[in-house]
Image (cartoon, rainbow, N blue to C red; front, side, top):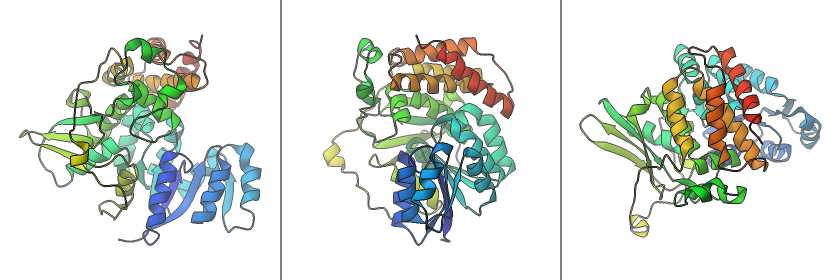
Length: 383
């Protein structure tokens, strides 16, 4: 395969770091063109020295001086601000953009990458949750592939390869998070340390808290709906504590295909970067006798109301999922800062979904204003 130039939006986060690990194992196939980070300029500087990109961007302008000084003498262009990141995506000859920025902040640069006809390796599920109709339409118009990086969506994508049969159902697996066996009271009063203690995956703080509330699975359901053109009523969530089956596809003849592997995000990251090829990866292999059994059960919507809210928001359509997503981002941030109890997160989301103005056919500008409105509205409930 020809060498591919890669831009990583959010290179210092969990996905970004693991993407660079993959690239470092295949220097003959991948070349880093652009790296961006929000605040972690120290790690960004180390990554830049290791991978020698053409350009780096620290989105928080306050850190420009530190980053510039750290890279003095290197043949690397240093920029600051999200506008610079957007301009560089548009002007560079990048082949594939890894969209790994956290939350709603990833929407604008992803849209610009699509407009510039760059392939997207999508790790930022909020982009499709907030603006799925707009983003998928734009990708189709520009003939741009959106290659899923999330393990669940990658599993579905891989299971669909070579198939021409009618899909009957998508089955998204969920680990159940750290509270799958906890009671409602324990979940409501959970501490930050407890919520961040994921049993299977090593992820960033935002996605780990979303996993604890099971909002993450709701976001993934919406993302899957847009990626694969399936209505929510044909997407099933099953709790699979072992996290070996990453998701499944059921076809019209009753056959079910699953993609399996150890919980290692480098596997779906590498597949998105190298698609349609598979590359070697020195990762742990599944030991089925050691695992012993694979189990499944239906998620408890009463214990995890955030999941039910996601289904409601997607069914309502319009800007409702954007409202839900903005409220969730604000509430998770408040929880991480110790401002609210864990159990308040879904309550705040529900209040915002009731209070924020609903738009049936929002424009892109409406989506941005809806997000800000949802965040502001959520803050009214931080008491």
